[in-house]
Image (cartoon, protein in one colour):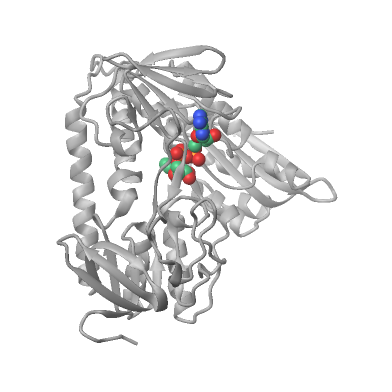
Length: 472
Ligand code: NAD
């Protein structure tokens, strides 16, 4: 299986060493394939260096500050906390560096060859590499995986300058906290940053173009997050069109809506991410790229060029690291000729780490209605959960959407939507229920520990059988 020829021919050449690319490399190598990875920066990609990991580390700093601020309620006198963000930045970097060393070591241990430089796919699965030291190489893969990831999107009138206008790349490198910020875009990144900054003492205004925060999440979940944000003093404007901003030396004023304006220290633009496909492949490579820049793939992650696959943020599937991992496995199994189960993108797990956290899988109530499905729903707020009261974190809800059977009872679980304390760690039961197409009475048989936050999921499922304990 292993290809040879003095280090230029490989079973698989992967362009991009982020979650999609490194997962493909690790999985391929563990299946006995010879693998090369071309990476222009550091393996780990956006997720490890400028995304998921640093963002969640800062959100943990925010959680610690929130806990200390609320300590007196428990009789623990700690005073009002102050935050030295440079220390937090240092801690974040330590976590990132440690994970990076671990990943690099793992890849080396599996015999994966890493080329530091920019890769361009040419015809016949040849990959031209411009190495960072200026040299050039040509690699040939029996198969090639494109995994070049994505970059923050920007909007006209808000050129990223690192001073007044930041994207996630710049926010995650800050050493000091702004006194005030306007976050443009109330999606996953916007809500995580709004929550983090607010807990750390920054005055936050969120400007979201659509009618609600977190478009795509279930309405009940969005309601809890929006109320919690407002209760903590975050100003939320939805249906807001931003027009531009006017710097004034010490900060800038963002103009939006019908003549409204908000003066802030910095603007954070979080309006989505675009695929990084420019210059990735020559025309002769034969890879189709759509008008928005996504590499076009089928559900086996095959591009239009034979032997060329694409995974991760480069393709038009949920932009989540764990989806990239799953797609990488699909691609490698495909090239090995093994049976493949495509990723069901409508049922992948989502986890958003703002406070309160959000986690879900499957259809929302309104998506089910749009598809013409009759449903039964139940929801249980975390307010009645004993563990939530013990930890003093009761904002939240679990909502389950099930198909309505002809007799009016609940059939297959279509969607599980959670908002509240540590729900990102509690979704797996709901994720399995949705993907196993389980019925509530099957899931309700499983016992949840008491007292635990996960009882709220169990109780909601129990209620869907027609009889509940605490939930009617
Ligand atoms: P997003 O698509 O989740 O949200 C962007 C938001 O910006 C949307 O609500 C959109 O309506 C709004 N918007 C777009 N243009 C606007 C404008 N001109 N003015 C005001 N609002 C505008 O994108 P994101 O939050 O930037 O995240 C990028 C990607 O990374 C997403 O796919 C996201 O799911 C993923 N991500 C996921 C997580 C997580 O799951 N924890 C965390 C970070 C990022």
